[in-house]
Image 1 (cartoon, helix red, strand yellow):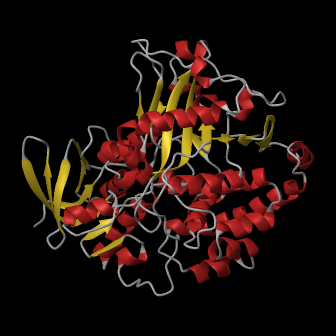
Image 2: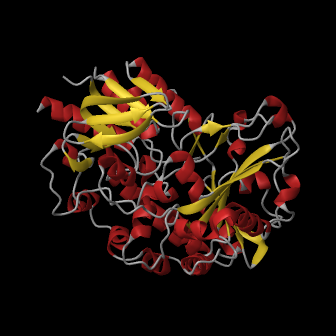
Image 3: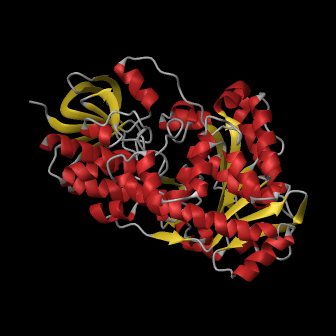
Length: 519
């Protein structure tokens, strides 16, 4: 008889979600996490010596975590809605920019678009995002149900032009039809390029799938701030799993999986053990599971660089009409016009760091100052996260030992091009007098988190529904967590509806296990 009902490989947020559901259902659950800390990419850490700032070091915002998962598991998690969606300086004239304020009247919004010479796009913007909200209200609830087909979801939605645009042709076509301004097109386009190395004209529709996931979260598409940082989300998931009786082991590296016997071999550095279970759940990337199963696979290509900073104050802007507290409270877009995004893709594909590098900036402390100590808050300090696009893993590999320095320089140069002062002049210093800045490349994610190719979604995102000819005969197939082995299921970002900080894959894998045990 197996010693466990389920052994879960990987203690990231999805693995912990699955553990929480199964443990609360009375199952014997073991979670094996190779790192010394649970949470995977959803962690908070203090990376700068002597500086009491708890940074969301990797993942940093929440969109896809359903209220149902929070309520089912009783998570003590608070998510804050941001008033300002975004601010985008005009790269050709940084003294003006587009501020998208969720509280603005239609007239004020129109004046904002008029400031950048894009007043006709104000109406198109409102219509476009009303359409994405309709799609979100239809698709998002389905993510916690057995897989629907695209045609079923299309019927639920009713007639909708944007659905056909998003699912039937490259994202570029929709953007060019809906919007006239290059800047506005770029702001919209970035949701299709987060962690995704693709052209907006790519017929694979990889950018479309990424875009869809970024606009359906919570049934609204809003991106929220987790109070206390990402580590609070993972800590709550771990608390619930332990309270249900799950055993969570860190420093436990899995070295092999026997799919037929549902056996997992792992080591803690001192001894090697083999655990047998009714079912094995994999919260690691599919390429990692393939290696553990002894089968070949092609690692995915991640595409992002993340720079974390602690500043003594917010930077001054060139735009006199917008306060830094407004501009940085949402997503601050840097050199992300439509044409610049496409040019950056072509440059990176040719093996060169884009100049300028498209970036997105966010200051967690403007929503949740509690991630800083009281003394740092009183001194006016802030955290800043800069997320650079179109930095594919093969480019990082080609740069070798200079990758981190080269990409950090590119990020800072791009950011400074739209500021009134160099951001380097505002960096706080750690206890050893070093500037509080760290850069995490795809190679760093691969080494620290075991993500092949540094891909934050564990691979290209799938459409969140069943393909027309997809078999849906078993619980694992119906819940989108099948690996091809009956006793090994996927409960991580590589599941059909994985990606982002959501817990959806973990919930769905748990439902498949519980449903299978009842059959």
